[in-house]
Length: 525
Image 1 (cartoon, rainbow, N blue to C red):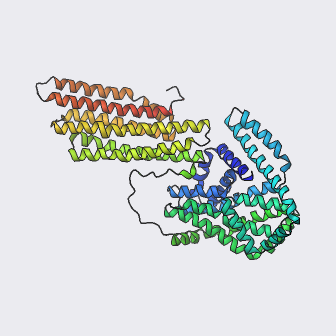
Image 2: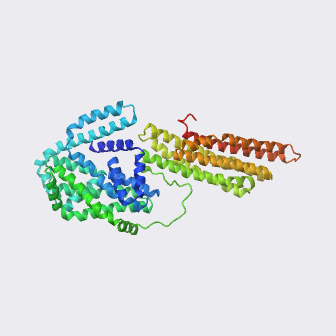
Image 3: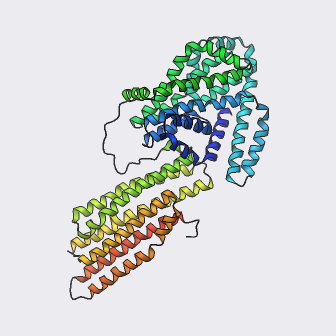
């Protein structure tokens, strides 16, 4: 129940925070101190240093953050995770049922999303307190159980206690669970301060297991970030392991309550480590880079997703941003096809046309990756706003894939017809067709950009270009019809190719406007 309470609280806080997590993580590039502050705040929101590390590894893996920029966040995450144990140590467990009742009522009966999120936060907090009450009650008989008391005396030995704490935390994948158990034992007097401190130190080290798993199989920079987390926590544990008596004396002077002493020691341990090691970011980074050398730079396949990260499924606001970034990547591939198409279709030989068509495979593979990612995200708990964003991303990806199909199938087919029938497009018609291509291609680029930036002005501008495009299209059709009436017996095959080309470019422009309309769908567009 304690683990479920933490998960419920974490998910609800993340949903309430929404896109603000993106703004917080974007601030990492300022300096190491901003990174520490961001790590503290993000971990306080998601209620898990392990989850923060998973997010950091994902950002480094996608190239959105360098390994060195991540170090400050890693340090801040260790401080932020101490919030849970402070909340538990306040011994406000008698309010558990009230929080559960109020939280359930707000989340079940609330009509507005923010109210539902707040209710879910209170519900998660109530479950956490209720579980802590149950653990505390269950720990009471252990005080008189000889085997347990002897075990606790053994754990008072720093190295053994740290080892037990590390193994337990690695198994349950949550340092907060270790904190809750230690506090529950402390409330019943079933554990002494030295044993509690040793377990807490080990819990910090055990929390690295999740980061190491998240970095497995990722690029070198992501694995280096996970290694920095291990090094930071390991250095801290080794530095403090011989000074636990002094740490115990200090926290005893601050409070007479054992649970508060353990909570204060946990925070003091992580703050002190950060204050010392924040000045050693460079050496830590160089040690990680030496331990895990960077891979040799190679050419990435065009179709390989750059930004999709399955570990972010539990944080929909971040996962949606990744999907949007991958949509931009898909747009780049389609734009590259459009830029290549006119020359290949109007004047290129068969080989050049086939190379243009072959690019559609990369687009199809990336499109399917985005759709599959969005399908997985749709199974998460999304707000109404997040669901709307997901639908927009899927629709835009579908439009881009349709444009690629028009180029690879229809336009290339017309190019092949031109080659087979030795059709010669006149220079004047060639200029008009090129102009149509330029307008349609620019409209698609601007339409996608308006969606990525949520730019209503640019989206409206793209939609309003219809009159300009229709004017160019009518002019092209007029010229093509005039040339059909000439005495050249070979005009009919040329007429068919030219008319079909104009129609296909019109379809591309149609999808460009539909992409822009996705931005304006709530604006009566």
